[in-house]
Length: 339
Image (cartoon, rainbow, N blue to C red):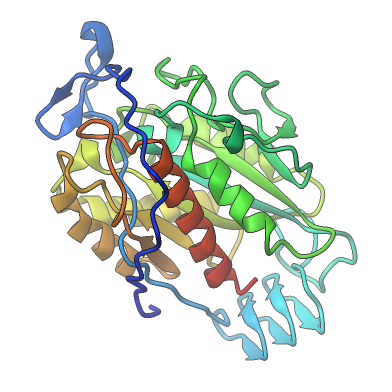
């Protein structure tokens, strides 16, 4: 596990948005609006404190001047060689499909990232013109008010709206868009980024793992995403915890979720999994010790700080804090991938 980076970045100006009353809070979990009950708890999904980071050469991999060579792969002067792949002086990934096996393809790589969690990942604060994206190198699978099952230009919010529970806000900004826009600054020439957003407001982690009500939705999106040409599963950002605040079993379930996602992709290499701290000044910042613990339990785990952010209620980041957190996720992923 790489050393945690607790650098506090400058915070943009803050805007408190008074409109939000979507989810009535009870204890440390969000409950469903208009009397709708959620058996698994409430929404929210905080974000990160200092960040742990790691750069690995993969199991059994030899890496000379390399950042992240896949399992068993040898990488000389390479950035991210696919599992079992040999990359000499190459930037890219092994093979097609999910990126396992073989020498790197000469075709551009489609780097796919999963965006997972509760309402702070789905988006709550109102979006602004500055949040929009016009860069065709940044795609989303489906997305709010866009055709499902295809790759569209990424614009917020990125998760389906309404989501399976009908809560996602079509006017919201989510950290995933700023995560993607940050990655664009370091994207290898000719490559493309694909975002697969599966966030659901007001949900416990139990609903995302096997047996949970949203597990199949996650598997379906992965099955579609992995068919993309030259796709490579590249990483996960995760913003969740208010619904499970203080539960000692939570870190182990985070690891379970990671393993299930990795198995669905059918890859044998590890990808960065970046968790965010929950907001300070809200209901559940004490959960952040478990956020750190989960990052330590993952093979390529990291966390990013919420320091310098503000909330618009006890659960949700205000607009400028969403931008800050998304940027931090992107910067940490760039570091973890060695871009």
